[in-house]
Length: 255
Length: 374
Image 1 (cartoon, chains in turn red, green):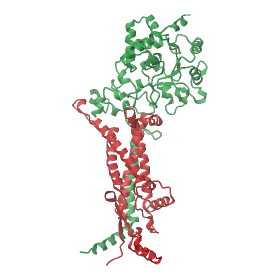
Image 2 (cartoon, rainbow over the protein chains, first blue to last red):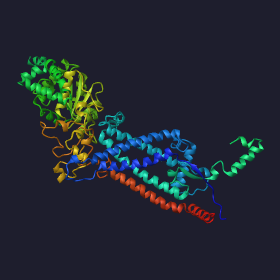
Image 3 (spheres, each protein chain N blue to C red):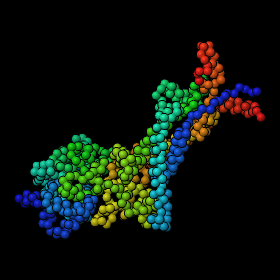
Image 4 (cartoon, chains in turn brown, cyan):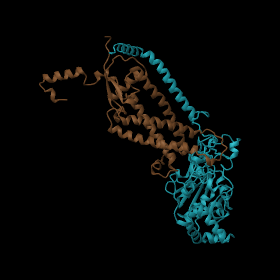
């Protein structure tokens, strides 16, 4: 027998809708970025054939718009899930309005971002779902996404016959013409690109430093949590039972 | 005396008097009806309106402008277009083209406004400076600001003719030293129809006036206050090079083989996909051509702030206040580079700062590895 090692319990953190949302978003954002950059600056192709025989740029634009609609749809489902899903998917995680949230933010900034030493080693500081810095960054990205969706739909509104994109036509005069809308729609994509780099890195960082299944959780849905953090650890069950027996309760009746 | 007689005439009577045949008249009406987006069955209604209805007086004010709009107007496709408005039929005042000048001209305007109060159409060409009480433009001793307010008071509708009176134009371009503003920034209680363009297409103005004569109402406007039938489509939507766009065939420089072949000018900064105008369907100079057909990308002259969206021959615009070469992509690349650099630095630092944690975990893990039961 060697040194004492911790026991870990498997916690179901990311439900299927959350995981599906994540991977559909990954795929669609990738497609949107690639097609978006092609639309912004298409490669020059010199072709001997007549223009009528080719439609590739039209397809690129079609893919961009169809993917955008898919992304909008999954985000709407995800917003619904923020009210219907489990505690880790709940909207309350994403806006740090509680004292607990601010405290956790401060802790994460200190320990994970500025790499200061964690002197207390408090179990409660270890996040099970998102930590509050991460979830707040997702909330910001949600707002950026909303901006991108609205400006994108506004660019489509004038030539679209559907009421949905038409609904956003007011954005064009608000931002000062379609050139400005296109410009904002273009520059905001760099926020996504920077976010992707930081997000993927921090997932790797947490997985590497904490080794609790941070990366695989988005595939399996599970994370590994120290058993002391879970109420039903053996020690706690024994203590609970003892307490109940002293108080004269019948342990069999309680679950 | 002669002036009052003219005022009693209908459009048709005056056209006939000018020497045009009925055939010319019908051709003109059919042409305009098609341009206004009316059905063929509506042509009769337009004919009847022009035959029976009295003319609508027009007063044309010139403020901060280059007279390019007037120039465009008198060179319209159909000779009747200009004649209808210009040749003393309707136009009671335009300081550029009217025979009278000075005091008599201003008197004529005052008289016309008085006689037709609430009925005339006011055309405004040019932006209105507002800085320092509007001293930067004055006509007949009055500032443009006061002239506009006085003339707009009795107008049935106001037509902002050209980009300057519609958006502010070149004088409103950054840094806008005279505080130039478009008409609808000052006049809120009258319908203001924007007919932007630098210059705009003259048929549009006649189309609006004819619509008003025929139906007694103003044409349907889009969210920017432009007549839908003329500004409902982008230059891109009716562009004859659209097939090249969809096929992804683009010219990359003006002297290239592709440019000669008539490839899409999108990569040369064409604003066609963002510009609402009828250039591609109406064309200019008696239907000869329009900028894209002549090999030059659309510069979006009927768009708001188009002077500030330079360079005209590039797709990417400069970020204001950050120097000429800092485009959106340059800034984006810097942000992305900083993110990548930051994460790499963080990764290296994390290996040092969390050395203890990482080591202790790997030690414990190794112990467990050795204790695996068979």
